[in-house]
Image (cartoon, rainbow, N blue to C red; front, side):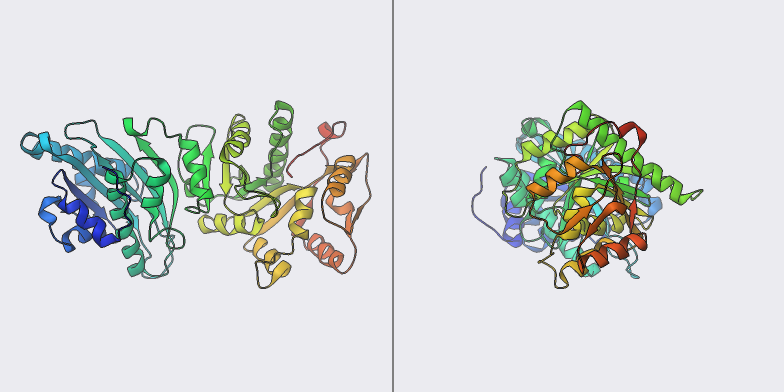
Length: 456
């Protein structure tokens, strides 16, 4: 049934408890039993709660849900949902099945540890029926906990879990209404949702790629991951402890010729990092990245279909794409450094480099200096890819940037040949001399071609 009234967490839990058609089990590992606690706290819990369980001990958890997977993982969450759902059907299906919409809720969470050395995150899931006896539906979420203390993170998980159960039963009219209900009072500052997966007939019209992009545009996530090899998951799973080359750009040209050039530039960045690392243990990975914000602050926000058109053109070549909420490179640095302390390198064309350098960063107290400091934090460099002189000239002419000059070699311009008038030029020269900016050479295969729109 639809519910348009805005309710707080207490009244959401109470509404579920007073609905005679809903009944289910709660299995929670990590971050307490905060979801079940809400339903036990508000009254009428006997109308909703069949069982609560918290298998904190690893041997107990393995005995219940099987071994062989990480404890905070999609695989463990799936095993929890399977087990609890099966037990509900076996124990109560005959007696309550004809009049009950069963559900099993599960979460496995790594909240902030005592030393504060972990990256708090978790997997949250719900299996539920929309009608008694009907086929079940699944909702799986990956979340990042952003509160500074364990207690606050537990509280946030509790609110999110209540929101999930309530939204599944009463706010499924559209994906937008569901996600707004899910995020109420907890997302945007406390919890990030950077992966969703829906299964079941009620979600047949919900496009997964569109949902991921919506998470970013609506402010639910800093970034989401799109994979060209079918390995769906949150950004953390591909970035964890990896040396990373990010290739940011607009990627407005989606034809095969430009796609090939994009791949060559990313491959050049990966090769550069391999040479730089030598025999280090890190095997670099390369990822394209786009922003869901407008590249030009004065322009309107890109529409999701247009974003997906550009993303899918990159995915067609294989590999991964990260869609970021913010357009600034330092925001990308901040997210990647959550999950790895290995080297991070950007490979960027000169037009993008100029934009990053020329941006006044008016949203930061320290303006340009703070923006550059954040960008180059924690072992970060930019591999500056050369640009065809004609393309650079056209881009400068069509943009608002001023003060840049260059020389060229065989109709190409490298970062070493790019200059800015003082005093900003002194800062640019310092970043080059300090190797924060690494000028790449033009590959011989591209010297006879042009490079319109590449990595801008």
